[in-house]
Image (cartoon, rainbow, N blue to C red; front, side, top):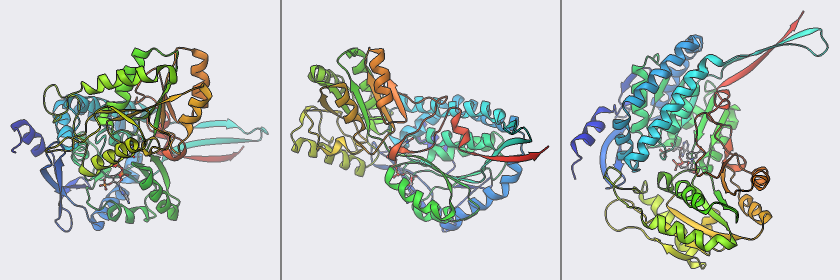
Length: 488
Ligand code: NAP
């Protein structure tokens, strides 16, 4: 099936080669990777497939540019990011269409992501001029303590396919603001958004070598040599916990500074005093944003026993009314999953829960035909041993279980190795604070189904990660602290 004219135009407009040292170039071996439309399974275009020597050339360029970039006036670093923000915002329609084509989410959701992604550039444009230090008197009064901050150095930024633009700007924004240079390795399923971003920031005035982008078929093959190279000073990764663990191990050889934004298994707690309308609304957002393919997606719904059935029924009604289709089509609410493997895993998890006794209130199956569609699904009476209460579902499936006491709810929520985010619905202020204190997560949505905000520190505890992105904390990940002991 041929692409529509506007679709072909946005695909044609993106550079499809590697961006290294301010130039677009083919991969060393001339190889390419096919980028697919998950709604049709058809190839959209081919992008360069970086080899280890290309990755090394990108690191060479980042290292060559580092000293000059660190010395660049912070105000100008901020102005470049600000121009990037304006450009992303001004070209939101075109960039959203590009994202929908490569990733599958609806145009409305892609536009929301472009706006979210752009806000990271604006936030960090403002932070670039707020990097400071301290001067203090030593406790014994004899000496002085000077604390200064500087860029950590060349960074490797590895991004996932689920938020192809925002997971990039959430790293690029603070890295540029702090004065770091970088090599970006986007996911091979969705490389186009990061290539478009490199083009935008290049035009916005970023000097050659500050940002380098390598799309690659072999993620480990292209990034492995960089992680082992002593010139690299930072690895910031967003992706699965399994890959994050491997990268932490690899990083040990150089004692590399790492930031890890990993997987989640978010509990969504509804107490008997909750506003049920608000809880259902919040559940819809927390579950269905990004087709359920979000680290912050509500993975399991723990509902007070007295409300469990009503909540499940109402959620099923809402999910059952959603329209599936290609994200570019008018009136579509839910796009396809990103690929066949992702859909297979979702099917498997639903099958496992049903085999163990769960009741399907709505959905439950793959959709036949082209593309990787899965019906929005609500399962009730999910047994505690079901795999989907323990594993990241990454699809439009909502398992609902009941709880007795507040203590039981907190214990169930914390019964996971993950700790990214939790959602809590209650109208009792004291309970809200008690539960927030008891939850072992980096973030909590209190009476709301979304936490992401560029001005807030995003990140997890336990096996959901190390470090924070966004907020005042985000830039700290790209800064080193140096202390000077002064003898007065
Ligand atoms: P993934 O398979 O871990 O991949 C993430 C990135 O790592 C991709 O660019 C991937 O490249 C690359 N990669 C894979 N294996 C690698 C290796 N051995 N060495 C170096 N790089 C490697 O995760 P995903 O499926 O793309 O994304 C979904 C996961 O990300 C979920 O677990 C989700 O929860 C998590 N996530 C977390 C956050 C957060 O902020 N905490 C945000 C979004 C997503 P290729 O894809 O090209 O192989």
